[in-house]
Image 1 (cartoon, chains in turn purple, brown):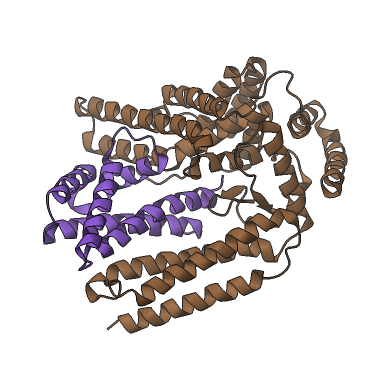
Image 2 (cartoon, one colour; image 1 turned 135 degrees about the vertical axis):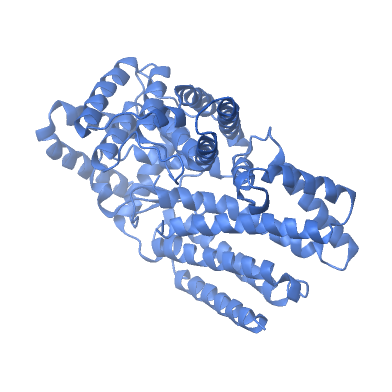
Length: 124
Length: 382
């Protein structure tokens, strides 16, 4: 497959994860407690999924490979940070620091979506 | 401050989506396009609904969520642009070559027992063969329907669907084998990193290189090699020759690995090694040996040589494991594995094309022309 085709397929996988996290981050701020709680659960599932070293889901493994390196504040330790965030969210509502770290995860995915899109458009 | 602009831009995007829908709201010119047409309509409806949410949901409109709103909006715009330039372009500019190739791919689908609906083909590709897995749209260059030697790549392209399509139990065994292979890749690079930490070389550089190589394998290399192997297993040696043909026509060093740079595809040498291992596994040892000889001659003629980084990036153990897992996956989803004695219309034609090409290169073009004309008549009359 050409670079454009491969990047298109990767973009599709990435954007579904990126959208999923962004939507959950929106709902996490919902004043209705049940909606926010359900979003918190969704983010925990998301984080557990990408930190599952035994996962055979190709899309999950791709996202894990990106986050492993792609979180600027913890280069190389991205998955450890995701794991810590999942643990924290299981205990309580996220603090401001944790919210900022979740934003960092969302931005890392968005950045990868953008660079993949640039390849689809033929920009290197 | 910026919110009114975002809201106006979202309304513009909704209007663009509606206009796209109007452009395809005509009678579909052939039954082969109905599925693509329906998929486009559904995607546009979903886009409009998603954009409406970004416009009206009171939570989304909160100032502290502007970053999320912009990210979601931009991705919706990308969806719209990709749909417009691929699937809708194919629907609004249908050509009889598209139909002939769509029918040919349908024939391949039947011959090999492909477990997913076959894709629609368009001859609007601007960059060799590729498949848009989201729209199940296989794109090939304009003149490709007039030649046979590259057509084994169609088998490679449809294999990408087996990895991209989610939540289909029928293809999960293939995806599980692929997932197992990705785990193997990660274990290989973990072991390499551990070995590097004990070494006396440039540790930081090698660590960065290993991280990048692991990312490249997981991002696309494994996907490409699995698709090469699927094509090898289902059409046989014609696919190896098609890879030979493609490599010969490109100005790329087949051993080239830039350890700290981005490479969408694995080196061509690694792809050929995996393909030959695959051919051997399904009983085409003699053909593999003959292809190997010609490949070596091709590589020698280009004057390139393997580098130490090549073998570090593409170890033989990973290529062998890919061949084993891909074969297992292909068998477990019930696809026909090409063997000596396998016979069917497209399988036979594509393998025979390569036999003819090597046996009498100067006469080949006339033979190919005749076969293409016959094939076109067959597909356009059925």
